[in-house]
Image (cartoon, rainbow, N blue to C red; front, side, top):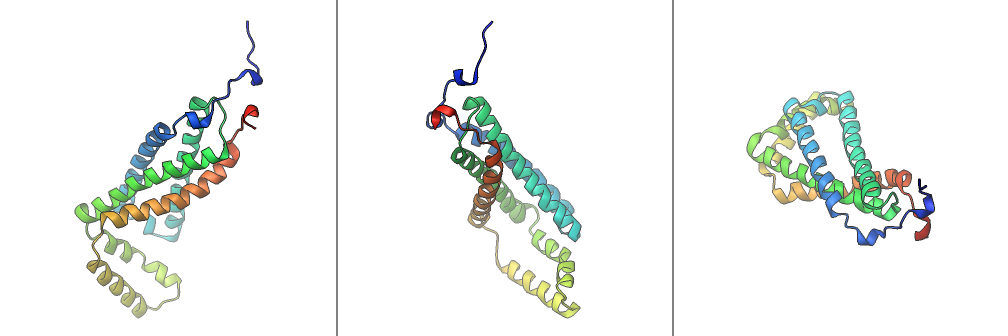
Length: 194
């Protein structure tokens, strides 16, 4: 019977293992989850129904992206790197995975707003009347603001580049923050790497 000691574990150099398979796998799964989540939000207008729903939708987004970052780091660390991962690798994995998933969400936004329900932005704006009320606007100001937004959105057609670019930029920001937080807890440097 043999014992496996911590210092008997072979060091796997991170540079010799590609992040791409893990990023693609978890980015695709996350992207599909985002598409389903967005579809439900667009069809039910859940996220704009009340202040509580805005908070719930925000927390669900954080949970979705945070869970995705956790899963990709755990998989890559435990299955591809021999149980060790540096903070830099955690950041890279998390950011790339979130950006990939966000781009899928951006493509869905473009398709949904261009071909499925071209009036979704107006519907969402109509739901946000309560936000304007909370800001202290009177009914005339609210009406003028909604008309201005609807007129502006009627002139602006959603573009694939804007949808994907905005999603990618948001993904970088979100991925950086979540990867830094989650990576701080999940990183595990190999003693031989130091």
